[in-house]
Picture 1 (cartoon, rainbow, N blue to C red):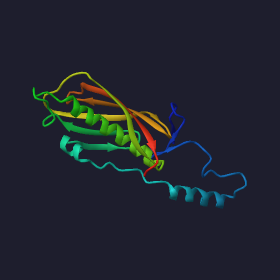
Picture 2 (cartoon, helix red, strand yellow):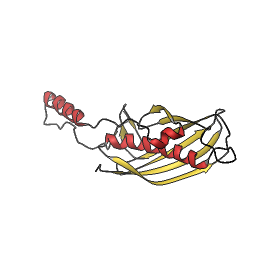
Picture 3 (cartoon, rainbow, N blue to C red):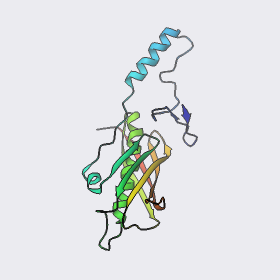
Picture 4 (spheres, rainbow, N blue to C red):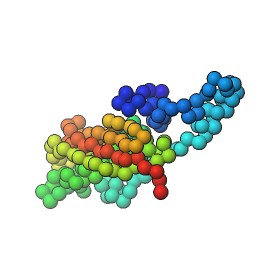
Length: 176
């Protein structure tokens, strides 16, 4: 188990977050047998983390997911098919790619808390253009909380050059 110093949340090896509260913890009055039963009952009720499912836009963009967890989502997107009229990578395609990665990472975290998420802010800085090749995007958390998350998404080209940097903030909400 590691600790995220920016939020105080504890992350398990599966990437699920715990607020460090006493839920499921053994009190001094419980016996070892009661303790084991209590821990088992808590883990049986833990929600299963959400698994990425591509939406229609994700498929149109040609996104392929390579890695997924609450701590990191990595995917690729081709430049071909995602260009504007001058043959260069469309900034909107890059923004949609970055938003998807950050939202997926947030949703995996939220699902471990029994919640879903909704984006409330996206900003993106385009550093350079691209005309061909495969882009790789990596989303990593800046903040994993119980009510909000923030993720940084870095998109690079085939040569490892940064194409853009994005940040997304998601609100964690109860599912409807």
